[in-house]
Image 1 (tube, rainbow, N blue to C red):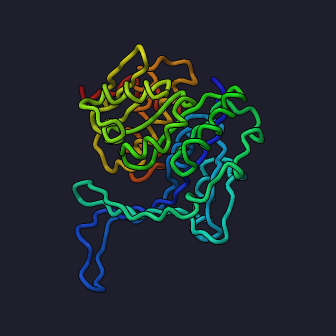
Image 2: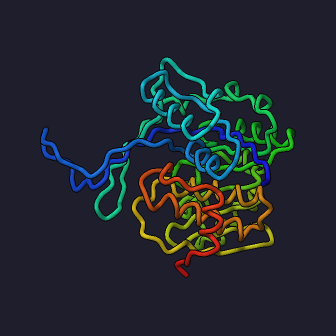
Length: 312
């Protein structure tokens, strides 16, 4: 099996999921719900968890608080087998956290605290300390800013690593300008469809993805929710449908797609096959609550990708 050693750099979050929230109770009233659970998440943390399940060696790099929320997040990441020794702890910041009240119809609004994620700098990141590093995945380049993110990814290339980038913020032309300096150093950019259209103002997703390739990204792999994924390079374009499943909660599905796609590439899959593996991985997460739902591994996901029916 192909060895993949990943530095998952950037956004690490503790998600608290509350299932079957029909409304916010009036005044100080209470309400019973089906489930409350916590899971590790974020464009670095969540993707790292799923990569670990798919057989990669994963090292978390980021900033969290010196608080009980951080203690819980560390415990959950360690339970999944991630190396968390490079997560710095801030005494003056809380750990980034989200509360996700999931409505009966599956809608999931969110409350979020940026916390320590907003304090990460290049001084906190030492890629050379990760033994056998093959891949650097940057989740949330907007927190570093484009020039610093570009410097980080350029350093990753100098170490012989493949690079990937996932933006957390909503799509907006100003946000694209803020992170533009990192795109020429991103082998794979992993946005969702709303981000692509918002970043570029393009009339179609394909045109938007091509605009991001023109801006420097080597490959743009876009998630489209229930439609699946679109993968675009300067000379290829592939539409890959999602799998037909009973969806419970889509939290973390984008991170799971990223992990499956990147793991597929590390195993030598072509772009379309890697995207199919990404969609198959997202399908595992969507059938439960949180990025860490289920007990799948690479063999399970590969078998699912081969045998399951798609939405197409």
